[in-house]
Image (tube, rainbow over the protein chains, first blue to last red):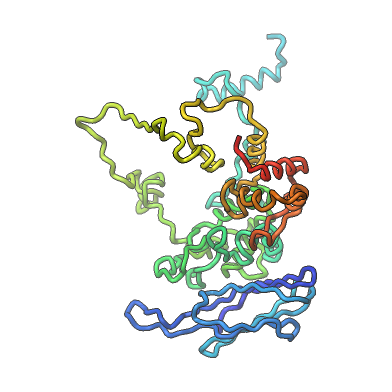
Length: 103
Length: 354
C-alpha cells in the first residue's frame, strides 16, 4: 500500500484551492539500475478529485511527471467542512484514495 | 569621595574586580552589558538543548502558522523549490531507524533537502527562532516555533500527526532525526582531540596543507586595480549596477576623476535605507526580480497610471497576489502609512540610490 497523500483544501470567496502532495516513485521505465537492467515503469496514470462525490478534476498522468508529484488546482464552489477526496491509479493497478475536510 | 553613596561605591568595586583583568587596556571605554542585553542577544539553542526555551506546540497549530507565515516561500508541504531549496523530502522510515540518510549516498533524491542533511533538531529550532519568517525574523514566540517545527517533523514522518512537541520530549525527537549519525566532526573546523579519542575534532590538523614561503619571498605584496580615465564610464556607473545590500559596492565611475560624493543623504538614499530597514529588499531587487518583482519592473508597469501611487500604497499595506506570478506578497501593516507612501513614491521615481 502506498503512503498517504498530503492534501490541503481551503475555501475562500466561493473558490476552493486544493494542494496535493503525492508519494509515488513515478519510474519512467527508461532508467537503468547500476547493473544495467531497465527499472520497470511504475507511474500514476489517472487522478481524480471529488468534492462531496461530485467529480471536479480528472487528470491523466504519465511518465513525465516527477517523483512525489505536487498538484495544485482551484474549483468553483466548496465550503468549510465539505469533503474533498483525491484518488490516483497507477500502471500496476495500485490505487490510493485520501479524503480531507475543506478548511 | 563623600559625594559617592555607599551602594554606588560597592557597585564600582564589583565592576572593577570582574572586568579589570580582561579589559585593563580599555579602561574607561564602554560599560559592562546589562543582564537584559545579554539575554536578548543570547538566543542560541545548542545540540545539547542548552538555551532551549520552555514551551510546546502541536502539529495542528503548526499547520495554521505554516499557512500564514511560511507557505508563500516554502510551499504548503515544505516541498517548494521555487524560492528556497525544499525542506522536506528524500528521507525514509529506514533512515529514521539508522540515523543515516540513504538517498545522500544513492542519489535517489533529485536534491538535498534540509531534513536530509540536518543532524540536530536543535539547529532547526534555533534557525526558525532566529531567522524566520524571512521578512520578520525573531517575531515567533517559542510555542509557535515548537508548533512549526512539529509540523515540519510530521511532514517527514518523524513524528505522528497528533504529536505535541515540547522542551520535555525534544530529546526523543533527536533520536529519530534521519541524519543524526551523518555528521562528522573529523576535520579542522572542530576543536579538541581526534574523534577516535573521544574528542570532537581532528586534533587541530588543518584541512588544507599550505606551505609558507621560506626563501626569496616577496616582502610586501601590493594588489591594485585601476581603470584608465578613457575607460572610466565604459560600462556606465558601476556603483548603480551593484546590489545595494551586502558588503560589495561598485566604484562610482559616472564622471571620470570626480571624487566620491559626501554629505547629507538625499531623499532617495533615505528611502533606500528605509526599504532595507523594513525588509523590502529581502524579496525585491532594485533592477531585477528576486522573489517579487524588481522596482524597475514595477515603475515601468505603473508609471503611466494616474492612480498608481494610491493603488500601490494599498497593495503594500494589504498584500496581494496574481499580478506578478503566484508567490503572494504578505501584508505589511506593521509599516507606517507615511513610510509606505515614501517607499512607493521612491519606487515609482525609479528607486534611485542617490
